[in-house]
Image (cartoon, rainbow, N blue to C red; front, side, top):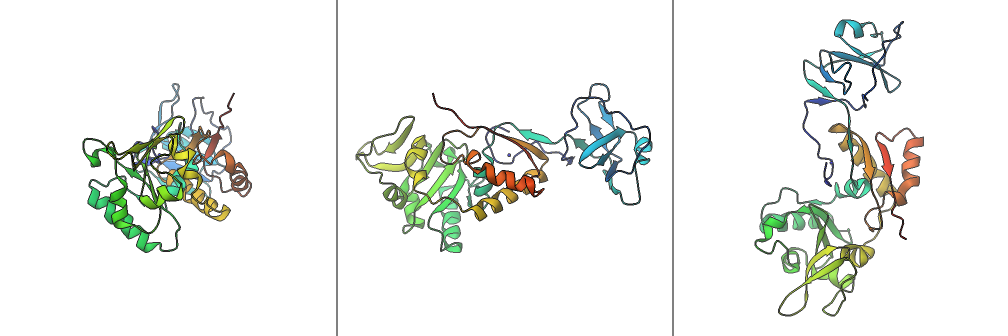
Length: 296
């Protein structure tokens, strides 16, 4: 998802979207019917007093009992949802400790280059995306790897100019520390030979001509280029967050910590009202901790 990637977690056959915690689960003296009963599982509870279990019962979004199949069967009611884990491993939901969730969610609808292994493959994907989205003012994406570009590890604007010469293209590296702009994007941002590097960032330049190559490092991405990219609408933000939460839940992610900060792309803190609206509507399926950097 976890380092600083989007929605990538350790593979498990089955993971529950609920946090089991570390306290001992007390069995209720009189079992009321549960909303969900999971049986025939190999459940790791993160509870030293009851490390493993076969079954669990969930009511109103909370785990009310953990134990053997026979112990948990008493929570089965006429309307309970029964899940047979068929002996598969069940783990507590994961919390991503460093993720820019909205930024990652928006990228799910953009050009994906995570597994692109050659310049030609990157060009093909970018061109296909541009053709499929003729009305987009900017072509955005992420995931390119440094190793694709040989010894320097950095791309050049000419590669993108060949496949999309008429619209700005701006692509984030897989680790979120470098970006790649075509000529149109540099022009839109006003970046030229005499443009000064902003604090904490760099516009990589051709050693012979001094012209920017299109590779952008660290804070230079936010100081100039990302400020001229149109911001997503509220509707686009909502759609992106719903999509992101769905993908996150699908791999067992139930919580996310966004450090946010001063980066233009780190919009989680700025979108707190949208997160709050999702919570009020009962659509917030992850527990979020969102911070903001305070400058001295």
